[in-house]
Amino acid sequence: MKVRESVNDRIFRLVITFILVVLAIITLIPLLTVLALSFSSKAAADMNIVNLRPVGFTFASWKYILSNREIWKSFFLTVVATVSGVLLALMITSMMAYPLSKKEFKAAKILMVAALITMVFKAPIVPYFLTVKSIGLFNHPLVLVLPQILTAYNMIIMRSFFQQFPLEVEEAAMIDGAGRFRLFYQIVIPSSKAVLATVGLFYGVTIWNQFQHPMMFIQDTDLFPLQMKIRQLIGDGSELQTLASMAGINYSDRTLQAAVVVFAILPIIIVYPFLQKYFAKGAMLGSVKG
Amino acid sequence: MAEKLSAVRQSRGRSSESWGHNIKKYWPYYLMVLPGFIYFIIFKFIPMLGSVIAFEDYNIIGGIFNSEWVGLKHFRALFTYEDFHRILRNTMILGFCKTILIFPIPVILSLMLNEVRGLKLKKAIQTAIYIPYFLSWVIVGGLIFDLFGIGGLFNNVRNALGMESILVMQKESWFRPIFVLSSIWKDAGWGTVVYMAAMSGIDPSLYESAAMDGASRFQRMRHITFPLLIPTIITLFLLNIGNFLELGFDQVFNLQTPMTYSVSDIFDTYVYRVGIQQAQYSFTTAVGLFQSVVGLALVLIFNKLSQKTSEGGLW
Image 1 (spheres, each protein chain N blue to C red):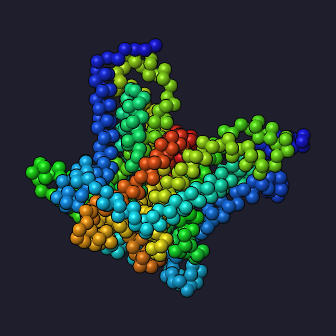
Image 2 (cartoon, helix red, strand yellow; image 1 turned 120 degrees about the vertical axis):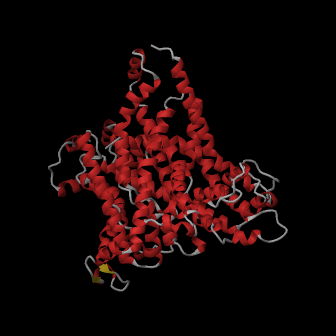
Image 3 (cartoon, rainbow over the protein chains, first blue to last red; image 1 turned 90 degrees about the vertical axis):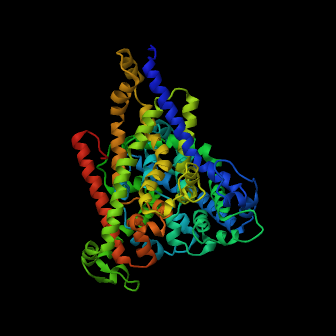
């Protein structure tokens, strides 16, 4: 039963589509300008003539950035923290979410209330800082991982997924003599890949992008994760500015900083197709209330 | 075997059994939640209880338990402190911007996206507007400083139009617009996802019969899609309002410059600077507690309101 689109409706739809296309392009412009700048020459950058395309195309800034050992060190530290953090977070979150999806588990209600409390009442940052410091995580690489391995929000997403898991499958497995542990990691976990991917990516983005935590807990520059390293490099008075004032080079502080920013964006763009696919699903799971 | 089956069956719907019995029967469950439980205790509940240092003169040697109890001293200091009024004002202005100017954008965007025909075009638009969400505020800060700096696109366009360059990031009057714009740029696109999910659940026959009755696209958007989104809007609003005074350290810290402190210094950056860096632990815990209590109160009040006006609410 299709009703034909009237002229007004058509205009309405086309105008909206046009606005959205323009907005989508505007969204991408800041990324394009920084990309252009990172491939531009010092002269062009100094003359302020770089807009959406590189002027005086050169790899000079990129060569400098990619040969900087400090940046790579922060990069690999962040990769290790993210990968190990995601694995640990998925283990702990799923192990908590699964029993909480069971009616027969008597502690489920209390634990759910506790989880909800952490969502609506946040502990002030200073006692949090003192607590984490007192367990020896100050200036410790594990502080990039441990505080991020569980959130009530992600746990509730997983729980609502497990709640929809067909009980008959579990009962059948129980009859085959599988214990509750084996049932969990041999039957339930392998059939929960979608929710694991989604929640894993939520954790991954949080750990990869975290900034306030390392700012509070990391002082040793050897332990700087990528975001802190970038902040250090693009901030005022950074080493890049002194570097770029030297003679005989084809990069300026601005082109170097642009290259650093693009360097940090690239990993995100590379995993973006996965992110988009699973995140959209996850947000839908999250929108299921309860 | 039969025993196990009956155990599974029996266990459902029986909540009156004793704790000891439940633990004995379902001990694997108790073991499984243990790591998460310990996490919540250490990283969430101990810091919550640690808030008592707001009522003490905390020192490292005395710790939480043996520092001198001073009651409401820090809270009294708080409300007479000039800095506090400044950061409260800054935080509240930005909080209102977030609630009034930023929160509705994803709703509008998703209503618009819903009108786009052609799956490929829609996908392409979504792909573009989702990207910024995945970038850290450090990077977004970097992008914005470049875009609005001397030689950035903004000033190049101004120059081309015969206007002079302005140091946007160093101007007090520009900080709040930049805060709003950067929030929208980073999060509004991604914010549509939940609404799009909610809209995909709307029964298409509603649109069809409305179209048969001669309702225009705009009327269908206004009288079908939007009303059906309201429960989702309320839920998201309630989840947001608790953060009214917690705007996020990362964003403001990465957008402010010393020249804009007078308008950009908020609770989160103040607590970081004075509490963590200058070690005034008790006073800044009082500040933090004020933030948390206001957040909690707002959630409770608005939850009550939404329960009264509609059947919606967080719980």
